[in-house]
Image (cartoon, rainbow, N blue to C red; front, side, top):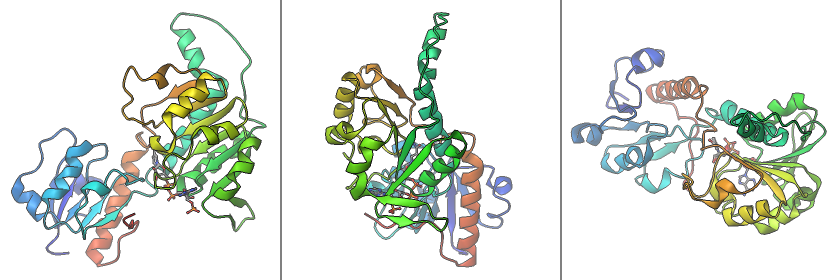
Length: 312
Ligand code: NAP
């Protein structure tokens, strides 16, 4: 630890990390700023790239020959791997985004079911157009991916009088008796649910998972919510299913991102789109800082850091 050089995305680390960096050599590279000098980059051993810092914050890792540890502020680190030098340990931000992403998943589902997006559009023309829309009460909601965020989504749905179906890679029974079903059961489950919430990582197995076959198995008019990663859904197949009126959708993530202004997904019927802001809310900063402070304390104590991710 004594030779560690930290590069953090915060200038106020001395106060906002609860003293975790006291006495250490720390450099800061905050949003919108020029990259640190070559001299600094060459000595950095512990790096926290700026959240949403784009390609330049990731590419910088390739100019850090002393780098040993990267603490990502993303839960899904698919975008980090291509830039991570061999032999450098990567830790994800598991836990940092749970609350924010879970509440967005529920918010998107409610907004689309209750037609809040249409009412917002009517508001721009002063049009009072009441209609009876779907409630989430009495619906069956399938959470596809029952990791940290999937579980946080179920917690938030608890008061909504809906039935939750949980699906992960493998089946299991939780300590309290709740059952998680296996992916292999998905074809039988999809025709029985009204809402599907995607919250799996983007991996070789999940990219392209939601294709025309998957969408055809969903109940007519069922709602697809994607807060996972855009490429989990085959965009062209979803656009076709939306035009057929087969499904509705609420998407925080799309493929491609950003979605070009003339992309057909924007104007497809029955879709609500937010610009990948699941984790990007006021809930982010305090949780991100708590995680980084705890990781620096582990580093100083010579303990293994949490959230180590294996290269796929
Ligand atoms: P996590 O705790 O690792 O949980 C992932 C879940 O997905 C696990 O239940 C896992 O199954 C399941 N899974 C993985 N591969 C699967 C497959 N091939 N088929 C079915 N299920 C599969 O991850 P998390 O923290 O909940 O985050 C999940 C993902 O959400 C992230 O990787 C990220 O891409 C995305 N995310 C998006 C936003 C946003 O802004 N919209 C924010 C944060 C995260 P097992 O339990 O059986 O292993």
